[in-house]
Amino acid sequence: MEDNLEWTGERLVTDVEGVLGVAEHLHRYALACEFVKGKKVLDIASGEGYGSNILSKVANHVIGVDISDEAVKHANQKYASESKLTYKVGSASKIPLEDASVDVVTSFETLEHTTEHEEFLTEIKRVLVPGGLLIMSTPDTVPYKVREPINPYHVKELTTQEFQQLIQRYFTNSEFFSQRCLIGSFITSFKSQEASFKSYSGGYAEVKEGFGNDDTYGIAYFNLAFASDNSETLSGISRHTFFQHVPDMLNEFKGARGLMFELQETKKLADRLVEIENSKSYKLAQKLSKIFNFYK
Image (cartoon, rainbow, N blue to C red):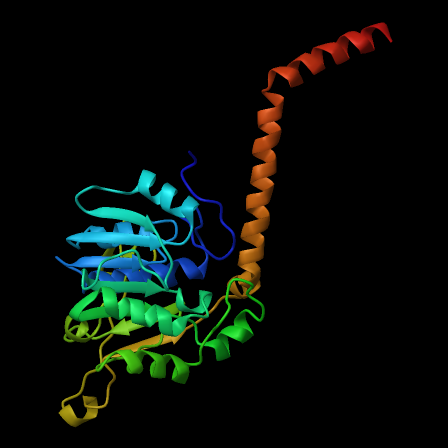
């Protein structure tokens, strides 16, 4: 079996690197890890399986459910552990779990792939224990349509208001957040960095708190001071500020999805050519061709 599933341009697989969407997906799972420690978790639409695997590093047990037989088979072979992690075939509107069987449900970029939103939320409430937690993400259709006007995999996207209303119909309490991918410079206070700001880093195998150990990015190379004998002068200084700067090179990389797909198809063709060249029939044909050319 190959190490990874085929990359279709929609379902993220672990041989895809260097595109902004990777950070978006890993950030969600990193944040979820803060809430699943010692819990039984359902990761619905688990796809390739890497996210459920990340959650299983801190959860008591994780069940990944996906509608794709191929994805579930792959995930079970690559990640599954009898004591910590299993994968099952099932749909969002008919989850193959018993009532009140999990403490937390994670659902990242799933909702837009089905028209059965009410059925999906009903099923989530059914499998959650009373007072259980749902952590869900979905695109805001207004800006997302500008970024990606046609996505054949999305069948029902929601506006921010529609998403809020859907969640609030099923849960008494809810908090909502926005997610954006940024590139730039971040300045944080010495005093309040731990108290009011968390960062995450890592890859498909593991996520962790902190900026990471990259030799260039995430390291605090510089210190910055604001000083005055008058305390009022310093009272208005923001504790955390971010300056966004997207290099021209990354602006030109907006077509990354199509480029990655094209590169993958090229690699498949190259691999097939190598396979043909190494085949017995090809080598025999080469010998016959030489003999034919000799007597020609």
